[in-house]
Length: 568
Image 1: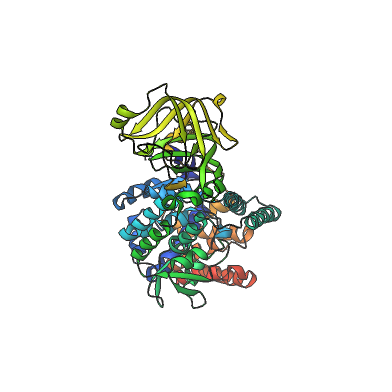
Image 2 (image 1 turned 135 degrees about the horizontal axis):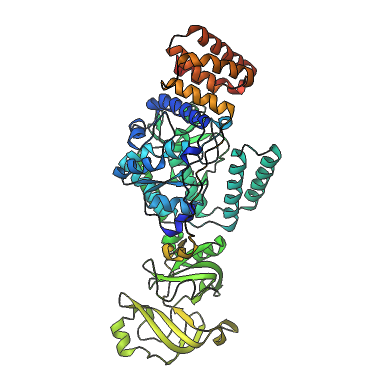
């Protein structure tokens, strides 16, 4: 699997041997429930797509098997470690790679978990990718979503959300730890008052890929992965109490959501073509297509790696820290801080990577006065005839009022067009303000009068992040220490698969009664076997215990009832 360098830090390994028998039982219960229910209520690609994409109802899938199964559909699968930044998540999908979080929800959170898990990522997302139109939509969404700019505060909300999901799924977390994480998230959300294009496209993703319905408004079917992986909300979402709205781009991007609660309304699209058209319309308002001052301001507010592309094609990738504006409020000079790379056509220019511009980069934006030919229209041939020779003293006056004086040392061309000039002994000023001083070293002048595109991430991420990819560390294959309850689950599985005698269930039932009176899932599994093998006395005993659990623990009632329906 060829994973680009900038995405490799998010890739993990699926340690299959770490899944416990209880983990496998959770997967089997959810998948049996979902298969029964969704074969009549999900998009037609769901049921057939399970097998086509490597999903087995009886056991947790192996990501490498899913990767092989997805190839005929132009996709692959890659294991990741939990919640990853939206830009990275979309970048995986843009490349036709489905990120699979390999953790699985606990038995206590079997109905739903806000943390990414393999039930959601594998059984939720993968099956519908067997539909060509839907696969096209998700990949195109990834290509657009990967360019979306967020604010600094939204990045902080993401980190707080990630911490909360980790704490909620950690069996060692105390109520106080969960409350602290929830409080931190509330505080970060309160501080995030601006709705960025990243948030808006995130909402579009939520109301379509995660929680979308399709077809007739009165009788829609389900295609959203969040619904297809939740046995609670997946079965209740079609009830009249949940408002069904016709899909509308503007309404979707203005409607926020809460990942910890069932959604009060869902959007029904006509077909997947409608979604493809909608995401393209949204892209028309994004910074990567709009450019200009407003887009540069979005990059500054993000305080994260972004790229500004000049009209010459030169791409500047770094953390945008400052803009200088003219009296009309238009950006006339940009400045990055920290490691910055210059690229063209998505390839880093030789000698202009992060090491060369490790302390940042500055460049004027606008036209230069009194030139016979604008610099960005200067061809290599014309430069050879009338351009400045190396060593020439050059003085440039921008219409904005920025002035540059320096000794020319180099000119860089791409596709026969000038994109960069380098100067020594150079000063760049705007009125009384010094933007670059001769003592600061070489000044590389970006050529281009406009900024037509600004987007998140690096123009050449493969090179920009190459030095951050550490050598792969071989993780020790740790087999978990199984609890007594895990051993009981494993024994019941062996009975179901014919590796143990049905008679051994009697001993298991005794141990369950003595030590685990509240375990409902294993009793359901044993009831399934005893009913199949007509062990009426044992089946009656288990049924009575499950009825008692429904009375004493109402929160288990729906889980037990759904399990009994399958057995009946």
